[in-house]
Image (tube, rainbow, N blue to C red):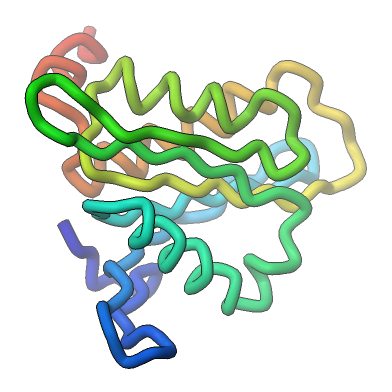
Length: 155
């Protein structure tokens, strides 16, 4: 699901003229106690597309200067099998928590990257809630949450 809002990045040709980078939809930044968090999601079908998305995001100078760009992806391989991986980018345990989020909401064929710009105030464990909240909100806005996961989150 592509988002044509200002936060969306259009698909771009790769440097070798081959496959195009999937469209990236960036959410609104959320600031809490001087740290800012922003989620970015893209529909992906292979680890190669995940790498293209990461490279495209890092071409944005603001994102490249983030203190951390935590990432997780989950790709449906059929027959109940998934390709999945994550990266903390120095924010200990954040990547694995994003990967767990993708699993519990049954998100498929998606990469989520959460950028954090550290503001000088340590947030402690509260940072994980902020990271997961911006990621979940963006996944929901882009239609990556399964009907089962969406129903479970409603009161």
